[in-house]
Image 1: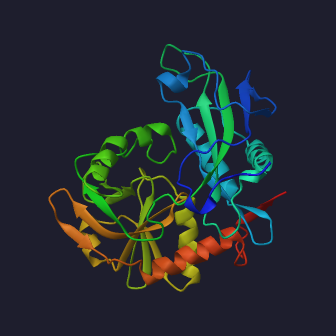
Image 2: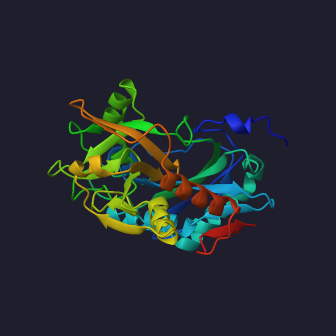
Length: 337
């Protein structure tokens, strides 16, 4: 079966594919994987995911190499992060071997949707874990549904690898210091929607949050981690309310490989004016260079109309490893066979 997809103009959005996979946790154990062609799930009206936010998701990408092999980038880190999120909101953890079986199976079932090498697109893989068991009182479910679907996607930002403008907000918080900020759960994203809408209305790509306790330190950068570069040093915020980014973790390693020093520490807002380059990083965009940050009083921090040299090197190097254009000396890539 052939596709009529224009790979080079794909948005970062949902495209219907052939199959997804699912399995239930019931009576204290996970069942076998089921293959489904339905885009819908049948949920109890009292499911805890609908009422009390018992929901976690992941995002990872599969790439077609010029050798015709499909590559997955650091999927084990996604499995660990989902397990950590499940612990954080008292859901049943998905074992690593089941997570692997599910993502490999769904990719193989939808091979015709893996964008070709050189198209600039990839196959986005979305694992999802939800409380499917009914509770009316506030308590964890006793049944969970784990499913994985895929969609071919283009760049997260339509601008591609070009600087975007960010709105620095004091009006909104994404997550509380002792809350769920470090877990990949839906509530954090729901909490960001109002501020993101305000940013978009003002012509900004996304929002840069400050810490919700003191409003002094850089926190998350929209749905991504923040980093800044100065004095040959890659600097990224340390905070318990920031989601641990697998991309950021990888960029720290690559920065050291390129001869940069690296620091993960609290980053004061006042430090923004001293950075030579800044950016947002995550699975969806890899790196999105930031050209300008504007706060709600109109104060501006300007970093240039072109991506910085170090950000460009890091972006190209990480992408080359993901697509197989550069040797994977770190053991980050697995082949889907």
